[in-house]
Image (cartoon, rainbow, N blue to C red; front, side):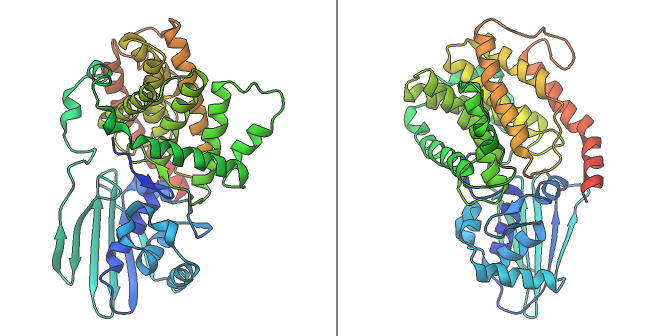
Length: 407
């Protein structure tokens, strides 16, 4: 399901992790750090706050990782950055020793970080997954080479199954294999609580919770708490988040709405955990076609769709109703673009999460959009393929324009 704990936006975290791996081999004085990333990592690392720094930027993430990152912490490493680490990193930036560029052609997730010192040259490559180190080269000698067998861009068994298969499998997963999701629930709701108590990011969750006259139903509670968790995360908070499909925001968008509906409907724990499994897997299933990172908002076409599927199943919906809820989400939100990770992600994420709840209730009540209209296909699998094509072909040009605007 590509679900792990992470502190901070996973794109700058991946850069910091590459830096930490390189830092393990540094013995001399750092002369420069050269960073090349994929376009999507560049976009998502441009404006989001790096935890424990109060500032944004991939160059800062790289420098912090090299001088103070503990590579053994992987995607949690930014939680342990100290003031001294930050001062040393800023010194490198002030001396203009950290360069940044993006690759014209690369996997969606790609980081190449080179550290030159007066004693050695170290190169680290991350590819396909945010914590997937594929090569470490020190002074021209490859000291590590490998790739874990989970890259979303690789052909894997999920591309050989249908959406209907996923809906059938959910009943057969041993509940013991779903216990880890409880930690994700605790972490993501703690992040929401922190976002409400502290001023983080856009502070949307707090503003929504303070509005008078709002009915605190499952839709509005979802909107408030997903916004608050995203405020915390995009604002540089240090609460760990359980990711979905490699994204922390998508982990928030999958877990929080599903658990809130389970609470309101008094759903038993095992059924809720199975719904979370389906939500996570549908999110990843969509990304086989759309790409792990793209010009389309992953919270809309991935996490929102996954949450809609999981909640509909949890409410007793059959495979036809589950497909209807997903088609609702695609018809409603597929045009939402990704213009980079930043504080305003809480707007998009909270919209997608609350719409997922609404779509589930509508679908179990018999509502469905017509097939073969616009991007909606004759069945849900065709819709997902259509959205994948739109993401990879259509939004490819949109991404270029967005990059040109923000660079």
